[in-house]
Figure (cartoon, rainbow over the protein chains, first blue to last red):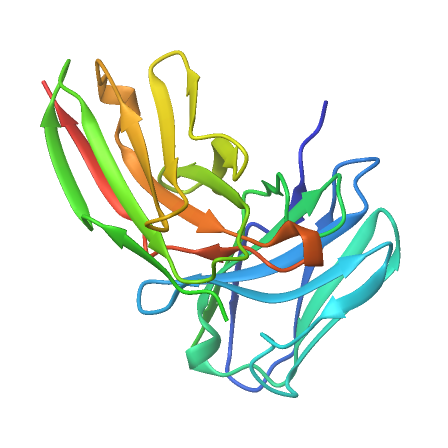
Length: 114
Length: 113
């Protein structure tokens, strides 16, 4: 059974460019979470969806970040324009339950903005 | 909001010894406490969780204890093995209100031969 799938696994881009990260949650899960992990700030929740609807986006750092979930099997996190301080590992997680129980994480996307 | 503190930040034990990682939380409404293991280059993996209606839960060499009065919970790993080496994160959530998980800052566990 496939877990959470994220693409790309690595992304290197120049400052000012648009970056799109993709996530496919586990089939049947109805909650999806986007996290950012850095050495300085640890694991931070950016946004989460329940039944494709954004529930809490208070962690989105600024308007340059946006996330969508057009259907139950796909979500994107977009950064436009990207900045060097956005360099981090971005994780997507999904959960079978509403809210935060039993989250299953993907392998992450390592983003480097030069 | 919830605040989770985790100690120690690094822990080195010899193979076969036990390891204990401790976390405290601030929101008395929190009722779900998972532990995650993160290996290098991978996403966090849920290894065990406990809910506020129990005080202890065990799964083979891993156990978690919860003290609601003191608002702290701990991860215990017995008979440690080199493959236990990883970063461990605790987290807390009030799932009744569909709140988000708040993570601790992580403990890097090194099991030496």
